[in-house]
Image (cartoon, rainbow, N blue to C red; front, side):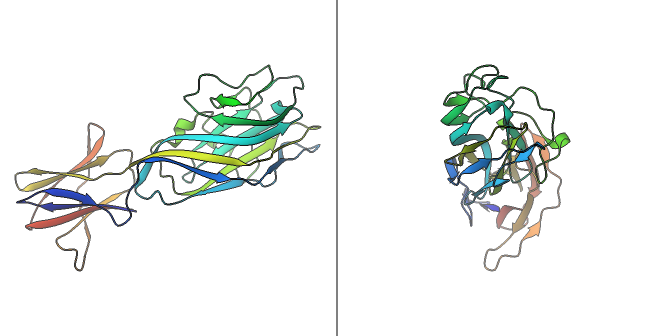
Length: 265
């Protein structure tokens, strides 16, 4: 993943990229049903486990917001159900666990949207209806079976844990039933809506130096430079960046009339 900038000391600066970074909101869907199985030895994993959603084409971008939609959720005892979303870099969020009533309040064919900015949480002791809710967990006292993250790796009911991470890769939805006797289904599968911002490399002049900066949410990038793109022979800028007002910043002496810079990962 690469973001590039072009510097001519006597003229101006422009930015380009071999794989353009995207800013916007994008939805990825897996419409296959998820069968919420039941057994006498819970927690019982759903089929499939996990259900996956592959995000691609968002090179050079970072996540600013994530929402999740479930389509056609039905269960005889919704409080039995726990759902965990895990992103490509391991960040995760419990979308729901032990909600919808400690007495049996079945639901049929409801659609649920999970959004940190929703006005309300899922009901703890009343029937769940279609709507938009904050991720909600009442009690959580059991591990999700592998390959889900272990209990000490689970980050809680908060989709903001994905902010600042890269969106591309496999997203996993782990669904379990944590109590015997009742089962269910997510008939229409699920979708993932991601809002992104591009990782931009900015350049400014300072006498005979180039001052380069990029957001400190973009971790793991290496700043590289070359005097020519034909052919390009990139070398690392071996100056440790410092954080200034939320941006990684590097001041690099310019030794050629024309210099190209990029962030590589």
